Length: 145
Image 1 (cartoon, one colour):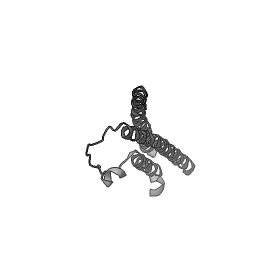
Image 2 (cartoon, helix red, strand yellow; image 1 turned 45 degrees about the vertical axis):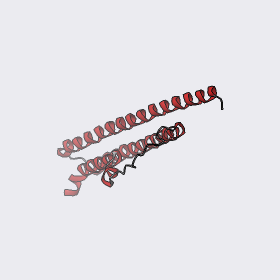
Image 3 (cartoon, helix red, strand yellow; image 1 turned 120 degrees about the vertical axis):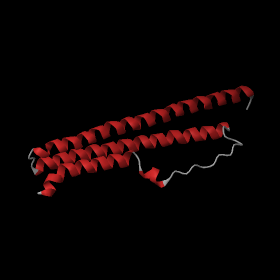
Image 4 (cartoon, one colour; image 1 turned 90 degrees about the vertical axis):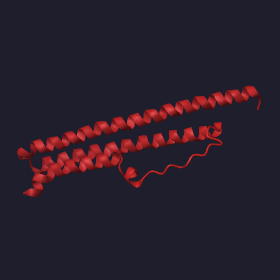
């Protein structure tokens, strides 16, 4: 390949890398917004469950509230996982472009291992815990009686 062709290829790779870096940043921000939106609603549902403890809601109303919480949590987890998949794809493309560019050639980086507790504590786990607490708060008056 001649010098002009090589220069164009390098420029295209650098542009592609920049675009994928923007995608990574966008997906990270999107996941945070999804999480913060849903966790706010779930915390609100916990507060609402505490507030309606004084009102004598029947079983059908409590079941509907639980269904709403499960639907919100389930949809949130699907949305988070979908965006995580897109994030992983963009990160993989950045790695492939870096390899093609030789960005880290000759550099010795150790693989960073993520502790198990950090893998367990995630957006999805937190959403599931908030949903479980909300459901318990909704059903608690029924369980007690």
